[in-house]
Length: 349
Length: 229
Image 1 (cartoon, rainbow over the protein chains, first blue to last red):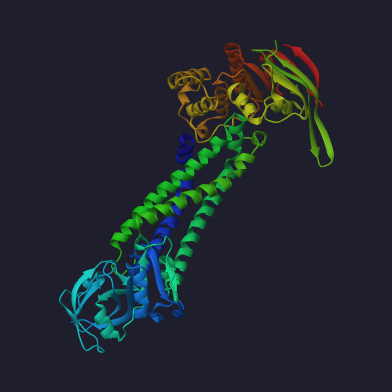
Image 2: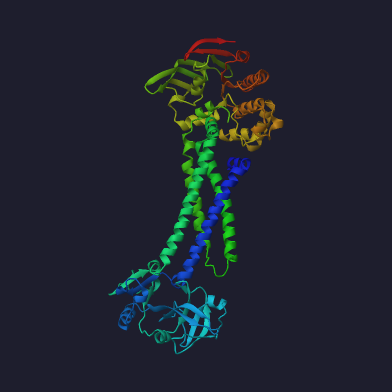
């Protein structure tokens, strides 16, 4: 460690350049990961906020919730077998607020208040993003196709669906506004399943895990796959960067390594020196990029869907260090191969 | 009794299908505290012999013993431990580690030799050795700021700091002018006498033979003459 640090101090420019590149790549990774997370929240926090469980859609709906329709009889059969089942429907739509401005929302109506907002008839509970846009408790909202208006009864944090704020309404109002008396989706939390360890199977219904259900949301998987692919590429690039950089440095230092091996320094110690340098560079670069990405999270404009959790940051940082370790180790194979005699015969370094 | 012996050592290099025998049955015996010089024309095999003796390359045949231990049959890790603890090396060029100060070069060697001395004693030992080679005042200098003679003196200090039993020196004065060469040889001679270090040294400089106890002359991979000075 001491030798590693001494060498870095003596060759500040060389290691600063590597650190700077790792910092920029890791910062970009954190920012894109934050955007991926933010967009994911913006797209599906309504579903992501639910506990682990199983979602059911009508088999004929072809994995599209808006085509699914669970009849009263089906609902009754499911509820008899699994009383803790929540039935809910989602309908994309809009409303006109008290200042005559049209707003896009995802109307949500649920039979159960354990996982969804309980709303009285004639009232609506909105996602808090609409409060930030000027809507207040007590405001009346309406729609050209409705014969009634709804009163804003409150706001909830982070309840969005398909990039629109959620608007929780009573099932009776949902029936009246959208002229339907069926529910689209059934949900049973794993912790509430009765009489069986696995998710129950119902005839005519298709079961989805939380992640599978998220992927039925239009654009969700395409959006997430694109961003995650960029993150994976950046991680791979950082690993290659470490491998190439240490390869070049090691080639320059083969003479020194040979002499050190000649005087009896263990090959393992030379590897430890390289790993220590990789670790110092990674940690310093990551501390800087984590600080800046967290500051960015605080300062990012409200409209920007950016959400970077400490869990994601920690996981990405760990992956960075592991990939850096692999990259450096691969490049270090030359250290193992170098023969002391070659270095001695090469002359002064 | 001999500290270090080489018995019928041979070294053959293969260039494609052509084999070239560089060492043709070498027998050497080194006694404790004596300086032995290997001399001979270029290509006579003296440097190859030195590096094989020092465990830096393997012999094709023959036996090499150090303190009754057979080096030729040792695993590479055992050989490394002997190189680190019992052998010292001075190369034709100083080959110092460029990012370590003079003092740290010696510190690294003690660390590599797994010196049993306490840190405090190690510091005293480093000071004593650096004073011996006249480099204590330059203890915090990096190799880049040292002259050729100074570098070689540090290389000598690094080679003896861990009190090796055998010191291998490959033309230690080749990169120095005659004044510096005399200084370095005087230093090696004094250290050998004071610390009872056995020295096997390659040299082509006849002036350096004044400082050695025995001269072995080589020609075409064979020993052609041995004489005490």
